[in-house]
Structures are given as C-alpha cells and as structure tokens.
Image (cartoon, rainbow, N blue to C red; front, side):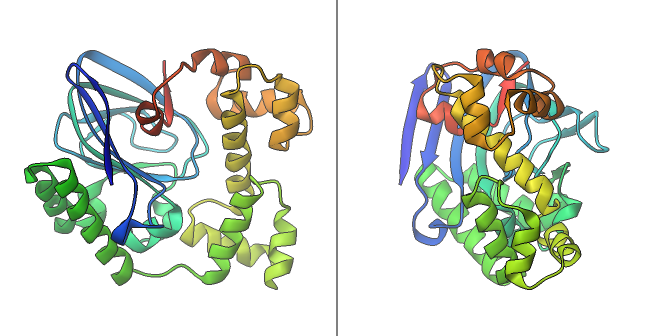
Length: 285
C-alpha cells in the first residue's frame, strides 16, 4: 500500500508498506520528488542495509566515499553496507524511488559477492546491466506511484527468486546479530553453528559484505541512534542500553563512525514526519 506523505510545495514523499511480492523482502521503500535551489551536502552514516536509488532526476555527487570512488557522479546507484561515513551532494530536481534491502536480499538481486558492494557507491547498471536501466525506464514512465511500486515489486521478486540464495546458516547468524543489536559474541555464533570463526567470517564476507564483528558494531551504533531520538535520555543510559561498556566507549564509537560526539549528533536531529524519517540514513552537514 502506498501512502502519500508530506505534500509541501514541490516536495513529495510516498512510502510503500511492502506487501504482495515485496512482503518480507524490503526493509523500507519510498518514492520521492523534490526540487532543491542549492546543492545540499549530506553525511551518509554507517548502515546495516543496502540502499538502492532508482532515479529519474538529477544525479548524486559522491564527494567522499569510504573506499575509492570519490568525485564520481551517479544517478541510479547502489550503496552497500558501510562502516565509515561518506559525503554526498544533491541538488536540482531529485525524483525517483529509494529502497532499503537487507544484504541477504541484495546478494540474491545483484548476484555478486557482497564485499564488492560494501563501503562503496556503485552505478546500478554496472551491477544489473540492461536489466537495471530498463527497470529505471519502466518506473519513470509509469503514470502513478502505485503502478511504479507494482512494477518494482514484480521486478525485485523475479531477481530474488532467480539469483543466488544465501546460506541458511548465514541468514540465521545475521538474524541473531540483528535480534541482539550486535551484542552477541561472534565466537558464540560460530560455536552454535558448528563452524570455525574463520569460516563464519569468510561466509559473511561473501554474502553480507562485512565481517560479523563489524556488522555487530554497526548494529550497536544503530541501536544507539534510535535511543538518541529520545531527547530526554541520558547519554550514559544510551551507552548502557546499546551495549557499550560506558559513555566514553559510546563517544569513541561516534567519533570513529560519524566523526562527531553523541551530543553533536543528537543536536543535528530534528523532528520529522514518518515520511522524512524513512528517507533519512544521513544528516545534513
């Protein structure tokens, strides 16, 4: 079901509540249309999801990325899991669909080892070839958001079913990491699977994109971000509830992952509608 949100002048955000072929397949999905008078710089923060942008408007400038690729300009793009911040610039006419995928679904859709996508911004067509460009064209030509989402659901379901499937053991370990917000010991995961830690790391490298310890670190960070939205919560409580040893540990992780303190990050947050929050895995510089 597509839900229009935030009709504000030229701005439009339409969020999809995944159902049908998309049920359980997407973390989130939104259509957007926005005209910006000037270029806006965004700090893209570490994330445990793969972001795919199918764009019909002006491109995104990747000004600084965790790996090689700084200074590139991309329109429809894929951003893999990343454990370091990046800086992008957007301006002009921004129009398209953005989807958030678990790395397991992305592994099936793109059919490449996920370490080739992690910490990178890549051109969609470079990964999917003509299939990717045809999908963008189909979505751009669709006369309404519901029809766009229907076409997207059909295309993604087909790619997932025909692509490689993640190892059930990797999927189980991924879900355990998520369920514990990354605080479960990696050695315990490997032991419960009957695998060596080295084998678990190798399989995560292939099908998730980052080592399980790094994934756990990102998940703890994301838990802290969610807790920071409660502005009345003390930073020491955030640290404890997110699984950090103390507030100093929380501060070190924020400096390492987003290059600012928890207080500075909390100050950058502002009240937003559900639609705006769904579009945000970044904060403005």
